[in-house]
Length: 130
Image 1 (tube, rainbow, N blue to C red):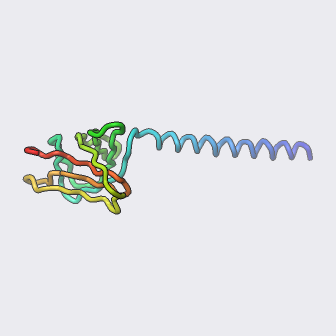
Image 2 (cartoon, rainbow, N blue to C red; image 1 turned 180 degrees about the vertical axis):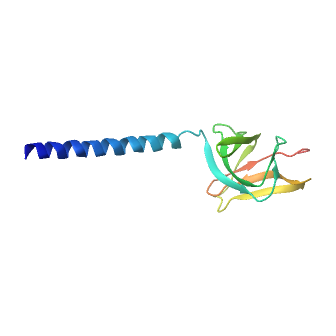
Image 3 (cartoon, rainbow, N blue to C red; image 1 turned 90 degrees about the vertical axis):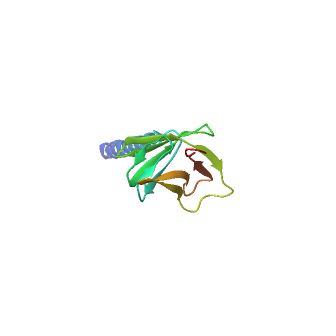
């Protein structure tokens, strides 16, 4: 009976350790990106201030922290597709939905502003001549 109690204790301890390790592994990967991030979908080709044109599709948008003029990085399938400077503009309230303001520029839309859902900020991208 005593050996059965020891086995139960050791088994329980092993389960707790495995669960704790899994929790740390998930937490570590979530901390990998420095700054704010969200997924964003462009319905058509877009052109960024940096001059890069991104094909229509869904991207992971990451914004560096600690600056009023952060670098905004767009990733696709874990690879950097483009990066562009932007100005961070405070909003009066959280954005209810992601909105993208753009103007036509040849075969693409020139991105002027992105207001990510749930953020109290907007990202303003200067365009040529502004």
